Image (cartoon, rainbow, N blue to C red; front, side):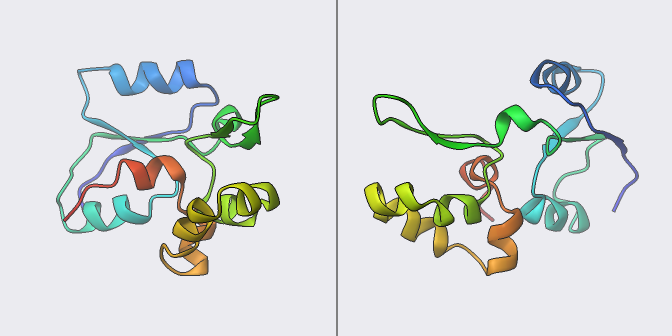
Length: 120
């Protein structure tokens, strides 16, 4: 694994600025389940890892007043499967999230990370 810098911004604006800096090869990280393997195998070699986990505004499972389900990019798979209303109104989504990895992986794996996962 190559050396890289590490940043932990506390807002979407700060994270976006770090990731948009074209002078560096920056990658976002949340749960890091897949990213760590890619780093070890040298599939990716960033200059900067931007940890998104401290950006609270991205971590939610909620329903709008009209019943629309909203999932934040940092919502864990465990949060999705453990949400009573998701299980009741969107059982296929809850079942799909529950089928991904082990309980340990579901506790750290995020919705955003799974949607952006690079197939190997």
